[in-house]
Structures are given as structure tokens and as C-alpha cells.
Length: 293
Image (spheres, rainbow, N blue to C red):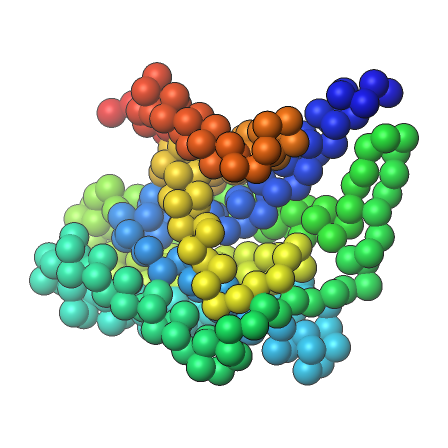
């Protein structure tokens, strides 16, 4: 294979694998920000918290990090339900969620980051599962399992969640709660209970994304800062409440960044990826999978 073509193909494949990690990090935000209209700026910090929790459980019990993330998911759901309960009690029910609620989630983010520094220090942590050093070669094409396994697991999780939201009564209620809570009340459904349940799911997804993240790269308490802009951009680009759009936008982001880094250097990657976001918003303001008003 021509060296330039081989470089391009490998950059695209690596970009798709990177994009699947972005999708894992952004899927929970698509629920809280896109479906519930809650600007959870702390979501990337919750992903990092999940990664550190996976490091502890995986190291202590000798489990695969992705399995550890699954075992931790119920605990993260409870954490999310608790965070939403406080958010609703102090801000949402009084109509202060716009500014004061945003400040609340900034506070959650800083508490998580400072708490991680106090407990774990500022050093990077990582997990090496048994497949981390295995790479499949197909001619000039490389396929590292360190990225393939968490990426495939993330996409499978998002697919299962999308199926749940589309086919169950509770899933449809989650999709409707931010648009018309009064209609839910007419059906004897408590919008607050639905939002608490859904926000718990979004935080559980953050914990699962942390398990995928710590397999792919080392993490430190400040790693979430790298993802803040990306995950919000991906959710907006994908159409806010669309999980399929979120995945497509994440894969496009990953490919754009990797191809740019391979041919023009990594310093250009964010500019090209966010430039693609601006183009999408210019010609399709509702995002790739969003519906026009």
C-alpha cells in the first residue's frame, strides 16, 4: 500500500476509535444537556471520577476495568440521583437553574477535582488489562485492542440505551420531560422523578466512560478539562437530544482530529474539529440529527 494512503487509512481508523471514546464521554451529556436541559458542566469531571474509581476497584479486585465500570454503575446512578435532588431543591424548583444552577455544577466539578487531588495526588493513574498490548495487523493497517475493546463496548452501551429510550414508556417519558412536563403530569407522571432517574443514568454513563478512558490513556484529576469543550460541541453538533447524532458527531470529531494530526500536526487538530462544528451550525443549526423548529 502507498505510504500516504496507509497513513490516511490508519488515521481514519484511529480517529474512529478515538471518536468512540468521545461518544462514551458525550452520551451522558446528551441526556442531561440535550434531553433534560440541565447544563451539567461537571460531566467530564464525573467521567474522571469514574476512571479513578475503576483504578481502585480494578486494582483491588483484579478485575477487568470495563467490568469494574459496570459494577460501579449503580453507585454512580445513586450519585447522579443525589446531585439532581440537590439541584432541583435549591435551584430548579425556584427557577434559578440558568445562572445559579450553572454555578452549582461548576462547584461540583471543583469539589470532584480537588477531592481527587487530596485522595490520589496529582500523579497520573492507568490500568493495563490483559489485551492492552495486543495489536492486530492487516497489512499496513493497525488495530490496537487497547482502543478497540473500550470503543466497541461504549458503542454497544449507547446502542442499548437508545433502544431503551425508544421502546420503553420510561424512555419516552425521559425524551418528553424537558419539552412538556405538564403533559406528563396529566398522565400522572412526576416530571421530577423522571428527571432524577434520567440524570442518574447520565452520571452512570459518565462512570462507564471513565472505565473506557482509563484503558485508553493515563488520567489525572484534571483530565476532564481536555474533554469539556469537545463533549459539549459533540452534543450540539449531533442535535442535542439525539444519541445517534451524538455518536456520528463524535466519530466525525475523532476522524477530523486524527487525520489533521497525521498530516499537519496535532496543534491544528482542535481548530479543524471545531471548524467542522461551526460549518454544521452554519448550514444546519439544529445539528446533524436535530429537528428543525
